[in-house]
Length: 401
Image (cartoon, rainbow, N blue to C red):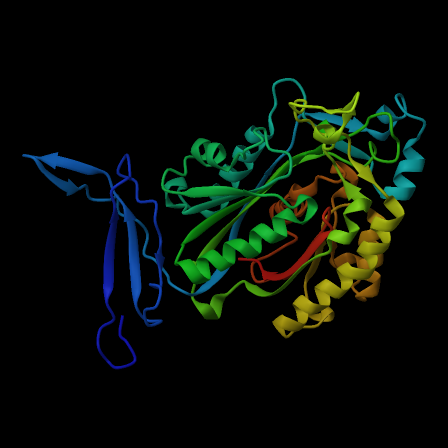
């Protein structure tokens, strides 16, 4: 590494005394206030005692690090529950029919967690399959992002998922953004790689919205399913960068149109005989509440704009992409967005009919199926967009492989 002056830039090793188990948990990044060419190697190593002298144990050899470079998508995987619920099944519990649901949503079936199945298990399966396709060892993963709004544990599930996948050298955290979650996770991963010198990031989009659906409400119970999907993003040289452009936006004023509120959000303020209720009741969430017409209007107006902004950043037009991959919410939204962008139907990826709206899982799930079916090939350019609760929405133009 050579600085602009021609002198070798300093490379500093920093040890963390709190590390356990000999795992290096840190990452390579530019030192605060240092020249751009300087780097600091952050290491967490277990300490050993030799004749009363504390010494740092040698870390396990890792892959060469790439600093401040691009990101490429090199593997994907997915997992779905075993129980399939058809439109005909739903017609037995609410006043609806296969024809009515399919005509309005494009959905025919959806998968739902049952028995002892958990979202964590689906996430682990999807993550392992992505690593297998990418031919990356689990202990070479540096960061795991679990994009979910329905974790098995309220405090988050990324740490447990990465442990079960075997990512012993990684750290992880959850991203909560409902149907926009995977896109936000993808962009977050590339920023860590670009700015933090991280090599491999496993992004998992997973949701089990079936547990928050009112199965007596035909307006919402017909829409949602459970699943997990994952993508492995790896650092690469700048000229190989697979993230060509992106755009992310939020508008909290639209939250009223799509939400899942706490069922006792106002309990601490409620009064009984003029006395505030305290302590509050046990926390819980009510059912998903959605104004379908407003969500549709929002999506068909702002999603095409978001994709166009991302394409503009990439220096591309809609006609130059190979695939359009939208959050699988409703076939009418998918068709309307493709029409507004003048993208033909044979360039649109959709598996909505088989799985329904799987929230943060929908984009990686559809991508995984398309890659394994041979539709999406190395070098293909994909315009992907997620949108939903918050309201939040985001688009990314990416190159596969």
